[in-house]
Length: 124
Image 1 (cartoon, rainbow, N blue to C red):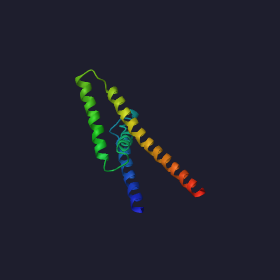
Image 2: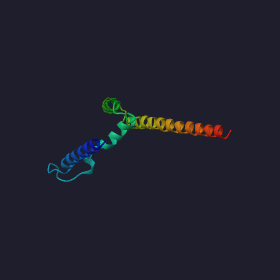
Image 3: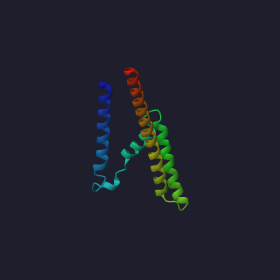
Image 4: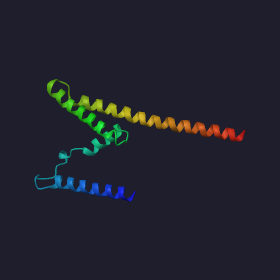
């Protein structure tokens, strides 16, 4: 357990240091908030789509990349805007999160009913 925590702290430190050097380096004339890429939000989306399973993470990342690449190609070749794909991406995320929430809710309800049935058997 200690090795996992230390490796995560070390990896976070190195990635934060690299990001700080990239954003605050003298290559840019000043720090610009619009140059932030939003990789953290993408990681949250991918983790949600993969249902926090490391084996599904590459597939979720490829799906998101496929969706975004297809959106940019579609925006260049047709009159469809990128916002349509962002709306589609949002709907997919809402459906995945709703499925996860409702399955957890169903599990809690079944557990509550089982406890109530067990208490009734003990009383009788």
